Amino acid sequence: MPTTNGCGPANEGYMLIGSGIPTICGFGPIGGNVHGVDEWISVPSMPQTQNLNVSIQLACVVDEESGACSSIGVRYLLDRKLISGSGAIYVYPGTNVTIGHRGLLRLEIDVKGENVHTGSIEWNTKMKGANASTTLARILIALEDYAWSNDKDPSFPDLTLTVTPGTIVNGGGFVSVVPSNASAMVDIRLMPSTSVDDILKKIEDIMENIINERNEFYRKISLNSTSSTRLSASITIKNQLPAATIDSNHPLVLSCVNAVKKILNIIPTTNGCGPANEGYMLIGSGIPTICGFGPIGGNVHGVDEWISIPSMAQTVDIYVDIVSNYCQLFG
Image (tube, rainbow, N blue to C red; front, side, top):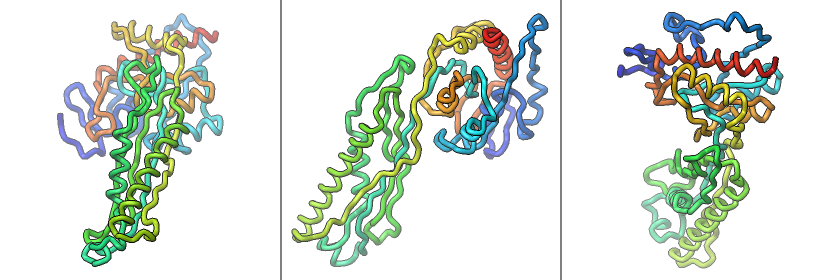
């Protein structure tokens, strides 16, 4: 596999490699950055015997990586009624007919402490100072160790509620100063039955217990029972979106399954996916949506994302078959 600078595609045998390639090429040649793709795939026409009154919209939006909550992507188009339809396919590499996605709750935990020079007598005697970084570390470990409810759903046979603390961590400012600020991101993947309020309440309880324990620690070690509270913590919700699904027997799903059988000669799975995307926006707006289907590819979000070039033509054939069969249901 060739190395790339992450700014453009590279052709290696039967693979197209480059950051964003699976999404860019999901519907065929889109944009000037993927020059020459039109030489590799041929878009077939609808069968001449069919006379369908079909309108197909291709939405290529920006900012889809902002936690699937962007106001300038799919949300913008929906709010201004620029897109509508009887069905939608969210482009994503792979032949799983994705009937939904888990929800997302992304939090920032901020801990405030008290700074003091690490060489000072005040810190030596613990009369002043409180380490925000080590307090935050205790909170993150407690979140990781907690036995979260094992929420399940038949649309997601291999997935459950997942809590991942500390995906990004920041703390301190100088090597010789006790950190007075520390923050960390917590990534939570929600099942349809998961209560966000219950999750937030448990995190707040864990934070409160540890903050109280550490404040008591500093009071005891400084031998000053009147010592003021040195540590505090807060939560900020950065991203929040619900899990979303459509029925595995929905006509759009069945049309996609049948098209994959016909073109690829395989029986695809019909499972919900772990990562979130904008499918919930479309489903919530009354548009049945396959939340992921496209050419064969891998290493999503990496600089060496790739798709199989032969699968691009097959994917176009599948899309055409889906449209021609699904739209017949609407006359």
